[in-house]
Length: 59
Image (cartoon, rainbow, N blue to C red):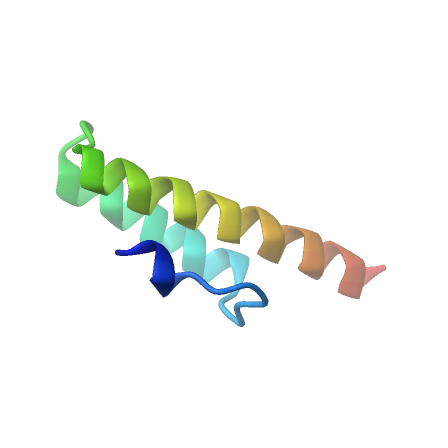
């Protein structure tokens, strides 16, 4: 996943992003390459933003 893949205001849910993070770790076998680390970091940032949005919508 390249940095261009994740855009601000993503419509992916926190649950979907969590699934992608878990899938990445399974594929990597518990040890991330440099490329996978970049993908992981982008997913986590997007997941955190999705969680914040979901909390605000629920309030």
